[in-house]
Amino acid sequence: MSVKDELMARSGGKCELCGSTEDLTVLEVSPSDGSAEKSILVCRTCREQIENPDKMDPNHWHCLNESMWSTEPAVQVMAYRILKRLAPTHGWAQDLLDMLYLEPEVQAWADAEESGGAEEREPTRDSNGTVLNEGDSVTIIKDLEVKGAGFTAKRGTVVKNIHLTDNPEQIEGRVNGTKIVLLSKFLKKA
Image: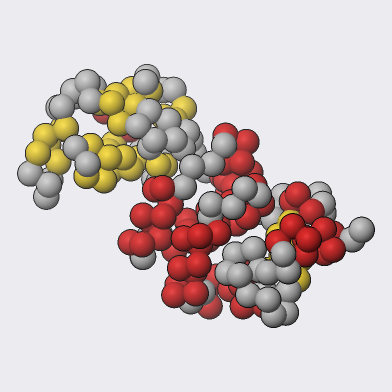
């Protein structure tokens, strides 16, 4: 059985991202070994937007609200990567990304972008020099006034499920239900 036949059977003959039944092709989710487990079945619209991120139509990707819950790791990885691209400019994508939970090995695959940028990037470190990873929990080591939010993030507060940013000196996390950016030098890995 070919990879496409396996994916057609797995998906019921539908795009695994948007549900379309037209112009379906196999898309390998990098890094891939060419197997069905490391590939997804996508329609032409999804494929073109994945391969040309500058031509991405954010409205098309509202379909990820359903497909991100797929039991297939390759579908989860692609949904995560697309939402990650859209999140900086589209609040709904960030909300979906905040809800999405990936198993640790699937998260590692999702973060292993084909560009290799993750390996070249300076790691984010806490006040003790410990490397922080996506999803870690940290403790605030100093009272921090949160500008614009009108509260102080108290020393000893635990921030769970942190998000790393492009800046290795900052992380994003929720404190008192508000998503804020914190400087890693004021944090300790929990």
